[in-house]
Length: 388
Image 1 (cartoon, rainbow, N blue to C red):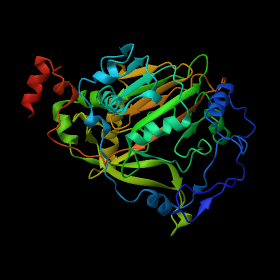
Image 2: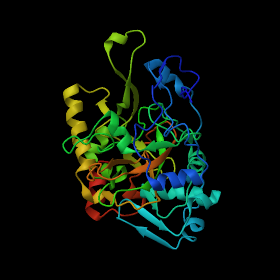
Image 3: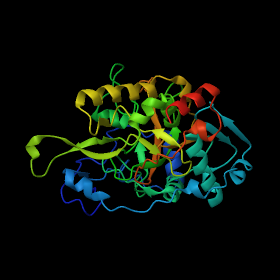
């Protein structure tokens, strides 16, 4: 089966010479899941779409704006339909991360889906273990939450475009990692920040995990913002930055200039449409400069903001996977990092669906999370009043 571009707007692309998995054995649990779902593996796995070659083709893929209505904005704030049906609700830290026990994602009603979106918006990442979930069901949930992104550079589940295959051993065929340079997703980042309407909810389902290691970490953008002094918040509020793609392409008019990134301008601090709370929205991998500042000034400030996110364990959660577990997180208010401490010695495999959301915006009237929840202490309130 010859690979095709993901969009008819792509006029030039690179066709892979192989559609197989480079001789890697598909993990048994993955085969069982895919076979049960009726996925045709006879033409190879995964399916690799033809890759765009030129920068302008990538900009055309989703060039027209669309209206995004966040599912969380429709939800009952008490989330009675979702939480009332769960056997247990476990908050993993005070700031970020919740595990729901006893529910199957494939069986959620629309009301429960809305309430789950609001829970994700409030808690940043929500986990469900022991899920019986097909790629098709995973995609259907993603479509409920927004425009499902079909990644032009990454393998897809055959016949289910938009369900991306995350199989580190396969990615290592092209970019072999090692202990010193783990590469890939083993760095703090947020998904698809280069889109004009970047990622909202991402859903990763891991069917195969190593016996030791392979955890994923998330950090809260709400809390990272609140780690900043009120005076510093006033300085960065309303400023924008340039966010770039993970992959590079050629300039059609000047291909000899070498690889170029897709770049978009977005706010450094953004407001979540469901909660209305402010979040710091930067990541070391893909936020490259602050608009309006000299490079030295921008580098210094961004370096500090990266550190605030990455070096405060009290605003992070580290999750230990088990087979058949799903994590759903909100890229608008988090960064994440996949630990490679298992060093590729055992297989790890999952499928991911990312729903694109609204164009990022900043509302100066938005409260912080702690303000909205009434968690500020007397000294914090006094400090805020001083710089109001």
